[in-house]
Length: 341
Image (cartoon, rainbow, N blue to C red; front, top):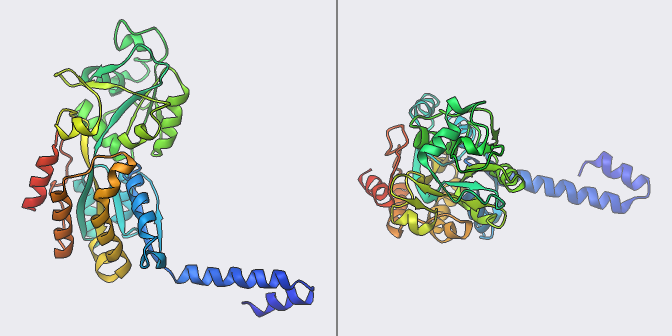
């Protein structure tokens, strides 16, 4: 403890304060000596990584590690990851070509691990009595750039819907969910109207839709499940009839094109030189299968996690997606890609 602070406290007749300061400074020293792992990225993947962190820190090795998990969106996460500022990047889409190039220039080798499947969910307020399903064409009509300032009422989307204001909530442009949704619905990444309530924090979107009877929004399935008393999911009709999001419809390849894989990307150099990153990644890949369902996502078959662990132990660097997202990807197709990596 700082001698000046201790002596001053004792001189003032405050031994309790001196003892408290001693304990505080000791705790600060211990905290600073703990190994640190930095995780950032997708708010969709955030609940999975948070659950893994909580489980890991209950283990003897985990108690010695300080892990920060932030959610700046998939794009924001890759920006930090490829600058070497984080050890692990949560992602709700594959790494894109410009991000691959940024990682290459900065000397950041990465390993790609699918950890779950998501059913990107379109939701409305429970007081919405008129909509129970929506077509891709109607979603496009709502969200395309040409809709900005023009499509502002429900009746403009479908003639038998009421003449009430349409209030939209969605991810910001640093979100992988934004990237995936715009490409799946509009056919082009980043093609979206801008006059909506945007946030990389899905909890903000949940609150917005749950408080406005005229609202519609979209985000990861786990956030819908966690708040389904205050939200209503819309079935998606992509041409074969309305299909609600669920583990079963994703596994049967019926919930398309809004079913998608979720990933973590690990800095291969961090995993090599930082034992704590290696231990945490090993724990993640070993335990995520059993934790995914508890946070509301769809686990991969056991084969998928086995492939991921083999790739990790072999130090397999790179991506199977060639720098672009893939729509209508099934769980089986993902496993085939990973097995051929």
